[in-house]
Length: 348
Image 1 (cartoon, rainbow, N blue to C red):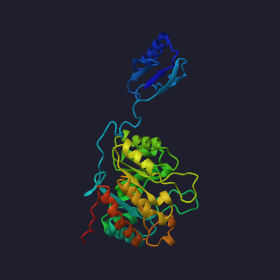
Image 2: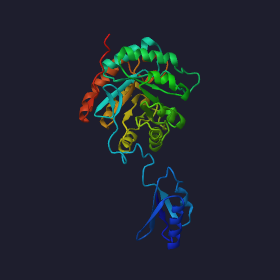
Image 3: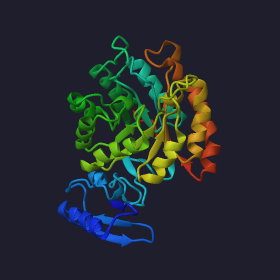
Image 4: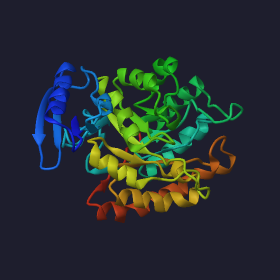
């Protein structure tokens, strides 16, 4: 931490602050400038009291940190980008760009298997699908629960795609982990620290969506909760934030994704489906995401969006998804990257 003294601080004031810094368990280093003096306090804030209350001292101008609070995931502390292995041949965070696709909600075995095989053939490398769906209204479709997880298992066997599905509450960890290759923490639970720690304890990769009203720092600190629990396999996902704009469901914050790439060593994905809430914007937003350096996309696909039980307005039919992936190739190449190799269908 850095403690900036007021310009009228006396030598006694500075010595008093230095002593209080020592009393709190830190080592003070006074730096005397032409206009004012700063006291650099060296120590581990995780095992000592915070120095920020020293800002109440009359001779102190302000107190601020000199290191990131998200130490474990910061690029400052760990310059090399993290590459996360999901399954054989599927690693997120390297040069290859991955596309995760599938329905918002698992609605039937036939639907999810059909979608899984279609998105695999189009180039998706992971299948997303919600068995548990936290909804704003308690009367909206909440997902099929364990029955939906069973359907995802069948879809995985039929398509060969690893599964990304949302974990909603701690009590579901056991059954969800039996199916999921990646645990998704959705926007509504992005600051549910008990759930983050419990998910981290599973050791599985965590796809952490940004909260709908979270700052970038809150998003990164949520990832830090997972890393601090001993699980470094965190994948960040920007899915849009709530603003005053009504033309789209959310405001997709590509600048936040850029900041997350600069500030952290973690892979960053973009979810244009939730970011826009409109199927007709997913294609251009996906191209922009690839161009700005995202490590992958999360796109909702449904064989019949008009009959979907949730979020039909933002889901693409399989044919449109295939065209989207095809249209990404020049943008991927311009970014100096490649699309991840296609997953082969299981041999029967």
